[in-house]
Length: 423
Image 1 (cartoon, rainbow, N blue to C red):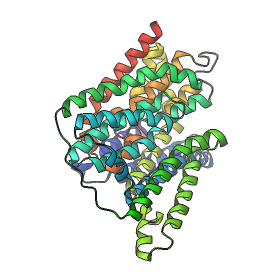
Image 2: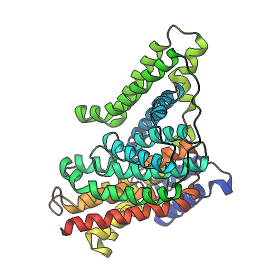
Image 3: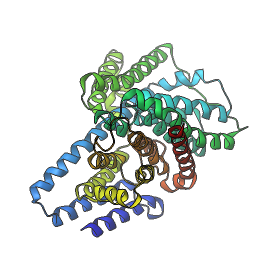
Image 4: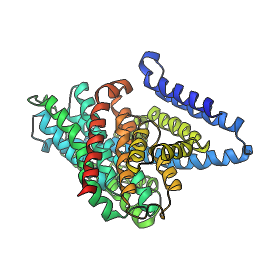
């Protein structure tokens, strides 16, 4: 069973990687891989069939929470875009230099992802860059840096990345200590790739963005939707902290409130105009194939987890490598291929708080590596998958151009963390 599962998973991964030569949408490959992995596990599982079904439904609950969060965030951003809300921001960006714009976008992404989370921040910033830049190639490079910056920014905050949140809730880390210990290494993870791409764009100018003329009423509507949308996105982590409910509940509440606001805003207008700006229209524009792709790939990974492959892999690494930092580094790199959530969950199950107490460097290092390692591959993080859907970035293009940048930052962050431990 183990060999067959791995063959199907690797074949599916290759089909996703070579989406364009095969002319097969990555969502189809991911869905087929996910279902086949669970079918193999069901047929050959030592436990009863109903037990496997319960495992599948348990994993589906976790996956659905991510998908609903993604759907809500993408719809809110689409609403802001439909109302030309991002035009308000672009009017305030006066620089015509691509390199300066890159620095500005990276800094905002890095700190905003710590406040919101890396997924929402990546969606907002990628949508903003789509408005500011004309060239598709420029958008790809900027989006590549956004993925790295969003993941790096999320790693040092207990609210910024799901793995850091898991460790925080599990009692492995405390909020203030993780921020203190990982701020500098995360900054280096982000800074090295940004500096290299900055050199690429140095001296280049931005083509002037033509902002369409709008009436005073349209500008007012755009401002209301933009402020409401960004405000509700910031509200989501606050809602989670106060209620202890999963983040997708806060996102669904935010979407519902946005629906009420848009309805009231366009209540007195003609039916055609009201239909153009309502939430139902925005939902139609959301990239559904990307959401289905995410569903498929997470189903495949959850099958490997249920079959015990991830835990066995983590145990094997522990036995063979022995060194805490080597284990953390390899787990970080693995998170570019396998979802970082089950990897961290496996680590939490393997090492208890007696072995590594709260705020032990191992947990901090694990938060850094698993939070930022996923940037090496575009489907290695939720932020990457979202940006891939927004800008239609090719898997292989990202692998050729952004992977080595992400790995350079990843290595730099590890080096700084280890230096911090020495001094």
